[in-house]
Amino acid sequence: MEKPLKYILAEHKLNLKKAFGQNFLTDENLLCEIVEKAGIKDSDTVLEIGVGAGALTRQLAKCAKRVVGYEIDNRLKLVLNETLFGFHNVEIVFKDVMKETISDLEKSLGGEYKIVANLPYYITTPIVMNFLENAKNLTAMAIMVQEEVAARFSAIPASSDYGAITVAINLRGGAKTILKVPREKFTPVPNVDSAVVKIDIEKDKFAGADLKAVRDCVRAGFSSRRKMLVNNLINGLQLTRVQAETALNQAGVPITARGETLSALDFVKLSESVKAVRNG
Ligand code: SAM
Figure (cartoon, rainbow, N blue to C red):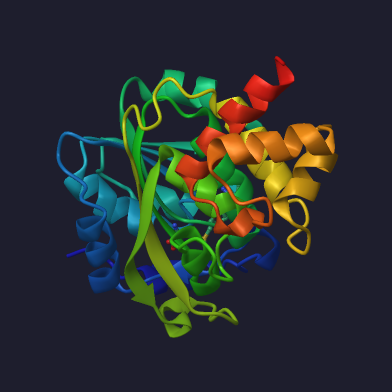
């Protein structure tokens, strides 16, 4: 039987670092549930960001074909040598994942892959945005995030949680909360509850759309939530008022709309009409 993680951590007398978001999971049942709800199969390659003491890694390794894990904190090497002993399908890279490009990461992962991670909260948004914008072979992400962030990821248009990141997700697929995790499940206990969100990437969603132009539109549309969309477009995309109003009309969006009422599809149409009015 595997030695419980809390004993391994105690033996190594490791001071967990808040700056690295080191709130570890130790409950084996919960870890198994995460892997099961993430839908990991024995043909999957999994990228885990922030392996910590390897608790989630161990469960992933039992179900997946291959697990590649990133960890910034070298002090965890000795712990991981112990927790991951005998798992020959796991490779750990001791490096700041933020310093890797997605294309280099994808080269080393080979083909299609899934991300499963109990993410350090301070890098959740940049990591998710980077993968949504640049990943080519990613098929799904199951990530532990703060509960309020989970609400933002799966929000519906016009709700207070809906924002640029919701649209970024909906441009590539869709998100749903698959598990709620109370704060007491972590060591040390953080100040907030968490949830695991699954983002499924739909191959070829909005195929043919110029996603870079759509993202520019989304960025402009959400640049000031207090302002009407037309004013954000004028400022953010350097359009004249006539051009901005014409683009909205052509996209079927009311002139008085605010950015947070538009779906991903609305933003795709709007970016096309912005392009059309610019080309005269
Ligand atoms: N996966 C473990 C678990 O579920 O118990 C640990 C999760 S803990 C919330 C986040 C982990 O990410 C920590 O071990 C931390 O050292 C690591 N980490 C933080 N920033 C990182 C970065 N930029 N690159 C790679 N790992 C990072």
